[in-house]
Length: 247
Ligand SMILES: C[S@@+](CC[C@H](N)C(=O)[O-])C[C@H]1O[C@@H](n2cnc3c(N)ncnc32)[C@H](O)[C@@H]1O
Image (cartoon, rainbow, N blue to C red; front, side, top):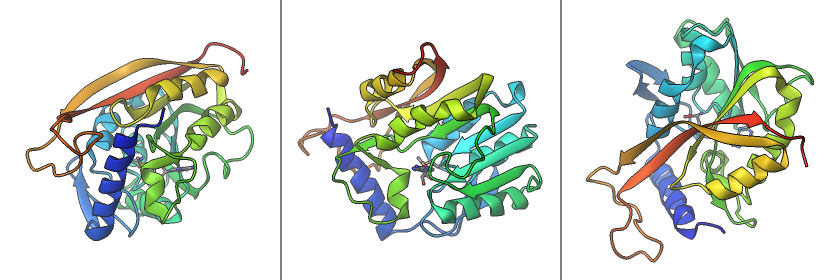
């Protein structure tokens, strides 16, 4: 069932982004990063957690779906992945990621492409690791994407999550590892697991952490707009394994 509260919170977050767009640079992992307009800044809590948890040293080729400003892809290259591909449906995000790869000296290892999920990849191109910090807020099927930044937060009817699992196989080898950064508070984990299972994937929790909302948090805290229910957010990095043939 759609989590109305999470949808409200997502809309609050995106409207705040529109009213006060971030500056053209931001800091993350003690580095300064470029940020073009309408791109999700890579200094969000979720980005920091997932980027610090991924097992870069165990893989050589790394695919980031939905790279945003490219922080994770660039860190992957800086931590030794020799072939990094960063995709985003938002052309400004792909451009920002390329600027950041060059800025941090890994432009020769990182390729960025504007791509709806895997659409810009050649059929049969595989990676050791595939990762997406997904737009985990489930939106109603009639949700209208007002601008590119909406794609950073919302997935109408979880259609993109469904398509992600359905298409994964084409870019996996026998040993590819698949990770998805998600919020169990703001996303719909039950629906996510059902959609994954339809394509034969099962999740395990690779890392999970709880983030306490800051004292100045001014967004919605409960479904009915009253009370002070929400005090923290749970973020999780799932690892998905193929456990069955696609249904
Ligand atoms: C939560 S943001 C994460 C951005 C960045 N990876 C980070 O961690 O800061 C989700 C990203 O997925 C991208 N995205 C959403 N739908 C997509 C799709 N169908 N194909 C490719 N990218 C998509 C959004 O544009 C956005 O940049």
